[in-house]
Length: 157
Image (cartoon, rainbow, N blue to C red; front, top):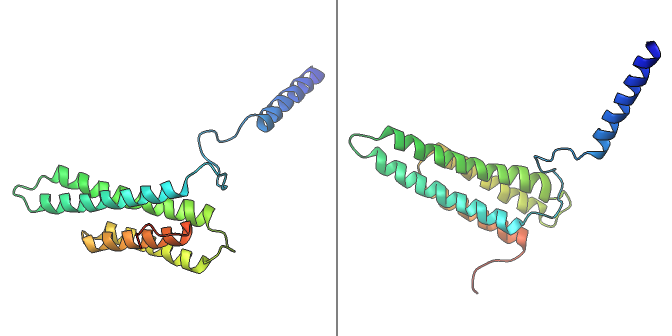
């Protein structure tokens, strides 16, 4: 009986080990290495789209808060939407660009890092306030980073 148990344990161990080595891990998530499947320019465009959504959310929430009676359900939904899109910008900034794309030895590392920090700060300020000036500053920081990171401007000269 003892030999049978040992043989079964050995076989199960081999099967589990093989499955662990051969089977793909984390198929539900993307690894944190720059594998080249993402489009950095598209990520920046998504951040700008999120900024536009924040701006519209602020405008709608401000408009709704001035009405009588206040439609608190819609007001909360617009504020939550503003928060969500600011979070998305912060996530893309920190988790994608700062963690995976900006190498310590990158050209203009300090300038890129400063621009990314500004994006994080202005996204935070968009969460804290309804001041549309923070959205303008957020867009400016995203554009500054885009110009540094992608190496060109999109303005006509």
